[in-house]
Image (cartoon, rainbow, N blue to C red; front, side, top):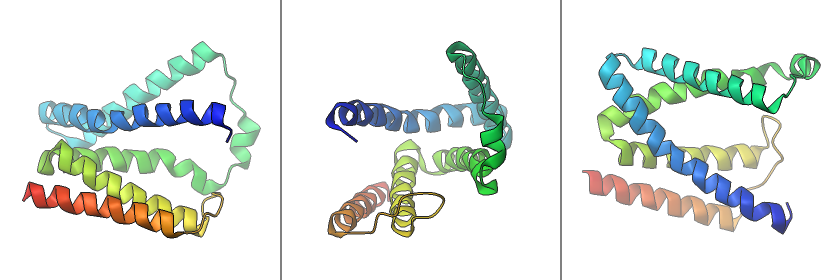
Length: 152
């Protein structure tokens, strides 16, 4: 990635990451009103699908159905994983609050991402754990420990 595309990507990533606690709070509020975590996840995904369909229509992109047929079977599980994530985030937020839930999820994401990169699975380029990655992981886990200690 060159410098011109790095900084916009970095800013977009930070903005997208800021949406995570917002999603937790919004879905938690909806679950409180509906009294159902599963229904909350269903409605959340339905609203998201509708938004994506509008975006798809606005950009006039045409699906590559041949590419979809050639995709590995496991690549179709993103929606299932995402649904489990939404339901889990609602349960975590209700039980622990947004800050602790978000901290736990971020720590789990970093651990999983480093492992997936290290193993090079699911079509990812292999990126071995090195001292810098191990140090970043240690800092994330230390932050989680501080957050959990403060929550007790």
